[in-house]
Image: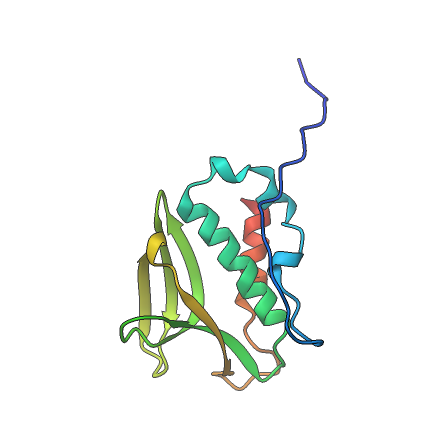
Length: 148
């Protein structure tokens, strides 16, 4: 027996931003969540999953505003973690976020972070490898969100 009644639309989480310039960037907070992300209510997500999904949206949005000479990287607040050229991001329920990539010298790097310590700065770094197109990880990560 199939139930064809439409599912109630998931409530959008509260978000707010104020832009103090006339030509400010497009921000994630003003955009609708992708359907797959909005499908599961926030209350049913672990802190790790919810942080992971929003980080991907922030990375994708940041990349959309870069030119072809730059790629996204993360700078980490606190300590001497430095900058990580993003190659992957993941989560481990209920409360761990992990970032994979390489540091400024090309050394393989992974940061494992508790969601209560989440504090990243997205940075634009010059492309590492000479190619026509920069590596846009945010688009691949966002596509995976739609598949999950």
